[in-house]
Length: 275
Image 1 (cartoon, rainbow, N blue to C red):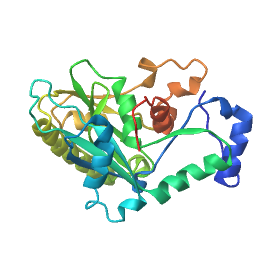
Image 2 (tube, one colour):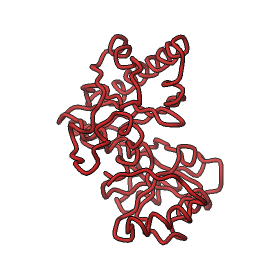
Image 3 (cartoon, rainbow, N blue to C red):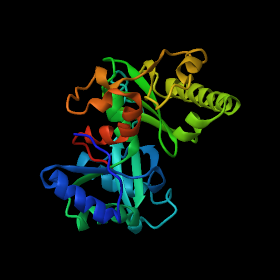
């Protein structure tokens, strides 16, 4: 099942209507924070038992965030280490958000009586999609453009190693004239080159097999441009090659895949803790 509904009235009214029409009481609910509502900090993993890691990391970010620790929700995402170099420094991502942002996210679901199991982040939703296209023992970079930004992720073995933002929106890229689009392409290629070089230095034990481009509503020529300007193969993904959706035939179209990419990634969420 995959559908889009026009919002009528408040978030609560819209969710309540969907709960009734789609019988959402019987589903597990997941939603995503917006990028502006959280931060990801790469910090050294504390040398404590697994059950104490989150508490230890929480104290470690005290001097990083610009608001009181009591007002923060903190979760931890592990970054895998090189199995052949166990003494290598181990890092984790501390994912932080203001309690007020979490509460504002949860409130409409509570009032609409929709059970919400998790609040995830866009980076992990994208990670879940990229994992479907991985080759065993190799990493993949994935670049997707959304209504407010582009997100570049590096994953391997279903794990997120690195995530970066590109301040170019999907609409900017699609609607630009030829001159402006060429400028965007140049910025994107430069950011990709820098990120690929950084990833190779930081995680040399994870060879990047290819760059995945998320589908777009229209053909922009970005794949061809990047293929000529970066040193890894570039391909535009088609969810139909890794997923079956016989009941949702419109997902065969790139425009619909682009629109639903984050929602699909969120629905693929595993059991790990996330902000």
